[in-house]
Amino acid sequence: MQKYRYWVAGILIILAGVFIIYFSKENEIKTVTVNENAAQTTEITEASTNEPSMIPDDDKVAITDISAKYKELGLIDAHNHDASGLKYLGMLRTWKDKGVQQVVMFGDVSEPSAILTDKFAWKAYQKYPNIIIPYFSGFDLHDPESLTVVRNNLEMGFFGLGEVVGASTMSPVVSKVVWKANDPMDGYLPQIYDIIAEYKAPILLHIDPPNGVAVAKLEQALEEHPKTIIIFGHINAYNTPEEIDRLLSKHPNLYADFFAGFSVYNVEGGNNPEQFIPVMKKFPDRFMLSTDSGYGIGSEKIAIDAMYQMLDLLDDPGLARKIAHDNLDAIMKAQPATDTQLELIRKLEQETGKIYHVENLSKAEAGQILAETN
Image 1 (cartoon, one colour):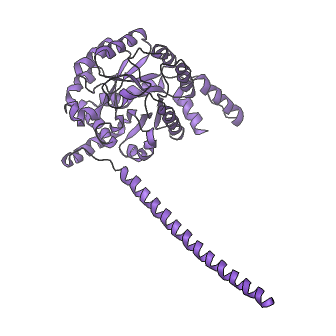
Image 2 (tube, rainbow, N blue to C red; image 1 turned 180 degrees about the horizontal axis):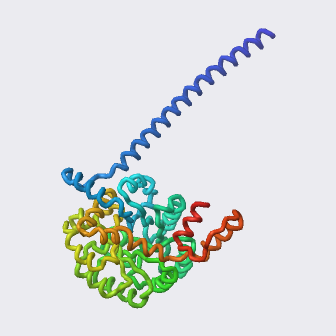
Image 3 (cartoon, one colour; image 1 turned 30 degrees about the horizontal axis):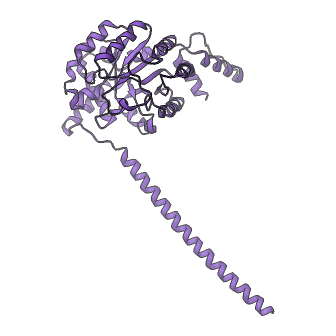
C-alpha cells in the first residue's frame, strides 16, 4: 500500500511538471506574438505620420529658406482640426520646428462627434496653454440647448466657436453633417451671435458656396449683429479677390481666414496666390492665415509652408507680422476673463495663499493661471 502511494505521488509530480512546461512555453509564444504585433502596430503608426509632399524637390530648399526668414514672426494657425484623432500629438514637434507659435484647434465640426473632439481640444489646451487656442463646435444650432452649451463653454475658457458649418451644399464632407445650418441666420445662430459678442469671442464659419443665398444671409448676420466677430473660414477657397474686397469693405466685423495651401498648392485654387496680395494689403488688420490641417493638399506640413510663402509674397515685414500673428492675437487678448475663471482663481487664492491680481485679467491670462495649477 505504501509503495502504491509513492507510485501515485510520482506520477502526479511528473504530470505537474509536464503541465508547467507546456503552459510556460505557451505563454512565451503568446508573449512573443503580442510583442511582434505591438512592434508591427508601432511601425504602422510611425509610417502613417509620414505625410506625402506635393512640393517639387527643386523648390524645397527655397521654401526652407522662406520659412527660416519668417520663423520669428510667431505664426498662428487660425484654423486647425488636429483635435480629431489626437493628431496634434504628432504635430507638436513640427509646429516647433517650423515656427508655428500657436494653433487655433478644434476637431470634428457641427456633428455629435464634435462633442468629444471639443473635449480633446480643451485637454490639449490644459496641457499646452501657450500653444493651443481651443475652439468648439459640438452643439446642435437648431436646439435651444445650444445656447447653454455656447455660454458654458465660453465661461469655461474656450476662445471661440468653430468651425461651425453656416452653410454647405458643395463640400463632400461638411455638406453631410447633421448639425449644419442651412444659412448663417438659421436656427439659433442669431442668439448665438449675441452671446459671443458679450464675450468678445469670434465664430469661425464654414460657408459654401461663397456666393448666393448663403453669403446674402452672412451679410444679414453681419449687419444685424455688428458687435459680433465673424471669421469667414477659408475665404479664398473658390472665391475671388474682388468678392473678398467687397465683403470686407462693407462689413467691418468680418475677418478673413486665408487657407494658404488652397491657393498655393491645390490646382482648384488656380495656383495664383499673388492675386490675393492687393486685397490683403488693402485690409491688413482683417486677415489671418491657416492650414485647415492640410485639407485637400495631402499634408499639414506643406500647408504651413504655404503660409510662409504668402507672407513672402506680401514683401512687407510689418504687414507680414500682422497677418501671421497680430490680428488674431489681438482678438484673443481682447477677451476678458470670465466670471467662472475668476471664481476658480479666487478659490486658488484661498487654497494657496497666493494673490492674483484679477481686476484686469484677460481670458488668456486667466486660462494660463488655471492650466498651470490644474
